[in-house]
Length: 219
Image (cartoon, rainbow, N blue to C red):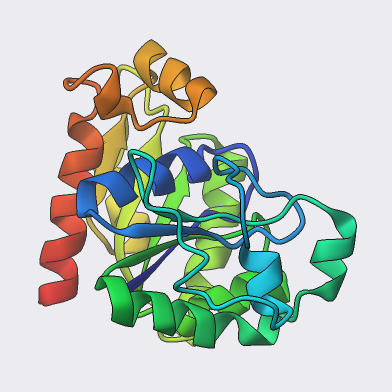
């Protein structure tokens, strides 16, 4: 399974959701943001190297942390050398080797997002309750539909005390998992670890999201 985690607007917590969802699904998380990598960095070959033909995608996966990741480089030269058209082949290789691959997509609606969605079997859209974030998320929903990356779930992040989950579910036509603001999630993100490492209760929304995704993809 290749699952694209996207959201349109930056700053909605997409990377945090992708990383913790990868832990919940026991998947490899691929940092596909070629220009602004945000997942924990690691030594050795990265996605820039893979997309430039300098490294094998499976060999670039790092298994020594709490979540297996294929990190992305953080240099402008590396981003320029990478060929986004090779992303689909790289993701397929990782999914074949590990079974599950969660792709942390870039923000926006650029061609790099489209390449990830084109390779994905399903998608998760991350949004906050703000009108701007929801509007951008709807645009990504349209793109995902055009590229046949079926919407498995919506993660309503920083949902607040009275989340309008029913309204968001009607808007997107997909199940919604609410993720409340959490100090534990913020601490875990700052330390580059999944929240389950610090607070099992704070990890429950991500576990729920993982179960929803698995049910949706199976159906």
